[in-house]
Amino acid sequence: MRIRLYGDPILRKSAKAVKDFKYLQEIKEDMLKTMYLEDGVGLAAPQVGLSLRFFVMDDGSGPLFIVNPEIIAHSEEKEIGEEGCLSLPGIFENVERYKWVKLKFQDEYGKVQTRLFEGYSARIVQHERDHLDGILFIDHLPNAVKRRLAPELSKIMRMRMEEKK
Image (cartoon, rainbow, N blue to C red):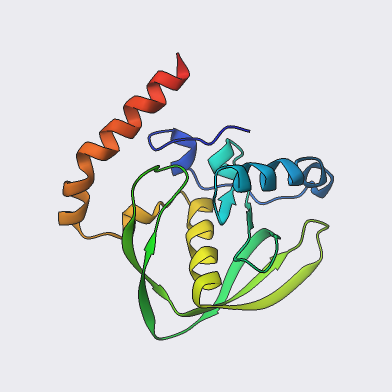
């Protein structure tokens, strides 16, 4: 699997709900392997060219496969923390996120679950779930920071074009 870089149109699309859970069994290991190989803590399907609503993550307590996630509750309080993204290599910025989120989702077998994520794992969930709606972490940044990042973003887009050749 190849990580799609900033500028790839699939990263800006809203992904479709997963209905074929047999397919997920076939690609689950590839997703996790790609995430670990790239030294990531999360990887959403659109980042590998699949416009489907699922992601893998590992906050240090083991891998988790999250399908068709829906945030059903979140904290009032927010906190700021540094984020990066495998689709935006080399860019790290502080982003404000909810301290905790309650997520309703399906596992890789289609079983519905509800789980509370706090702190670091809540940040990962929010970041990866954004990918499923075509949102990148840089979209949460102030305009001044986006302007400062413009040369780096252009460089990533050029890298993407070189990869396509």
